[in-house]
Amino acid sequence: MLTSKDVASIILHIIIIATFIIIFFFTYGSKLEGQVVKQQMEYIVDDLVGDIKVVAPEAAETLRKSLEQIPKPDLEEADRLAEENNSKLRKKAFIFIGIALVVGCGIVYGMSKYFDFALKDIIIANVISLIAVGLTYFLFSTFFIASYRSADPNFVKKSILKSLQKVNTHTSYKN
Image (cartoon, rainbow, N blue to C red; front, side, top):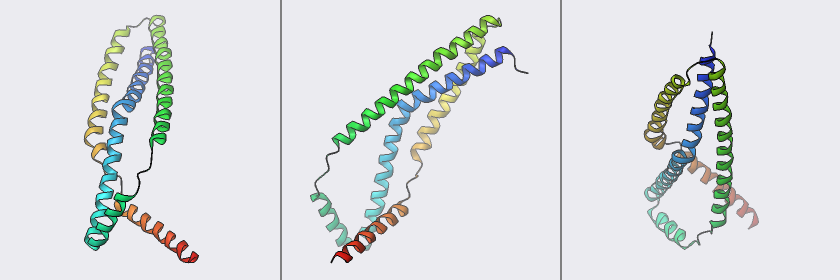
């Protein structure tokens, strides 16, 4: 059977870990995610271009020259909207976790006074747990998530070919 001290420890543990996860995501996690997406895209492009060079070197050179001449789209507005949306989301998350921290810590403190148990022991145990969880999150994210290849170049190639077939089919009917 759980004691009031155990229940207070569970509440504090959930609050501390939830706070850590949210802060970790909006700091290190989001930075890492951006790097991973960029690496995945570079991997797919390099794989695709490598295949074209092997099959048709002249076509690869023509494609490269054509791509250099294509005007680059202005993505400043899209970037601004994405950053604005992320900022709003970050603000909501921090407000939520701030409220949860205040309410949860208030409940735990109230329980410690009402049921007369030492809050210090619970805090120490939960800080040790947080260090273990934080270290695990950091190491796993840094060494496994960052290196995981979720992008499948063959799927991308197949999708490109299907799109080209559709364009070619629609173009053929118009001629």
